[in-house]
Length: 407
Image (cartoon, rainbow, N blue to C red; front, side, top):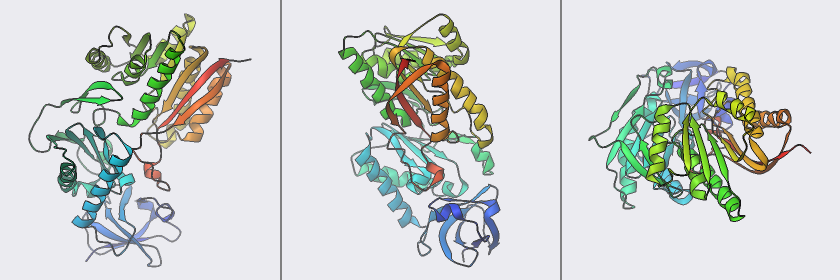
């Protein structure tokens, strides 16, 4: 007999609006026996059934909903259907050579992320309940991909994020099954990368910027068609992805900067892999120190790209993060020649669209620049945005502007 979680009167507004999380302070009582990770029924204060989810009282997110249908059992049949639909969706909207195949709540498998890098899967499990289904989901993914002639040679787990500690879970990374070479060569937008799935950030590579990188490659290509010489500054280059797309688009010179020597070394190797070393210069430096120095030197670029890490991972530090975004955008705009282009983004969930847009407007005023918006983009479609579900809202905000002197 399943335990039942009864919400307080007036609570549960998030899941009633389409969300997937129930916090500890929304729960009135729990009826019946359970272990953390079990599936439980969820009822409103008056007994109205709201669905089923898995419970973990060690986490502030006490319930993660698996189904809103109170008659639906959370069984192997349901898990299979979720996996099949996730894969069919990717085949329809994405290049599946390397892509995110499971994106947590947006694929109705809360707390689980699985990325495919060519013939390797990388798994990140962030919730206790979904951890119980993890191995079965991997089996099912291999099966549905096999039906399309795709053979997976290895699976690696990167469940080493600190957020697991908030779930009462240990951090872990290692092979699921046989060991294999954890350096994987992938191709995206015609650019080849060596992805280090064991020690790279997150699951090894930021697949969510795929379309945005292509947008920059195309922009530079169109600029070159006009007969212009194009010089690009790529800030927070990480493994060199934006820099290499710009170079492949035809940029005459790209300067790529990151504070991490390990990232820069990886980026250099990626440039060599693509035969682009002669056009891309890599510099190890702190962007916050470098940008003011370049401004003082009067340096100008045709394209400036700002792709910083998340400046905040909590709601109470948004104001502090806004200052950081404002500062780098002021400096970035000043480095763009009159009529050149700025690409700027934020990957912080807590820096929302309105806040980020306001920061950019403030930066333009401070830099005495006027912006003409070329386009606004979000994450690649293999990272789907589930409307009404704040848990998978579009965390990635990406603008391309033409920057003109104030006149």
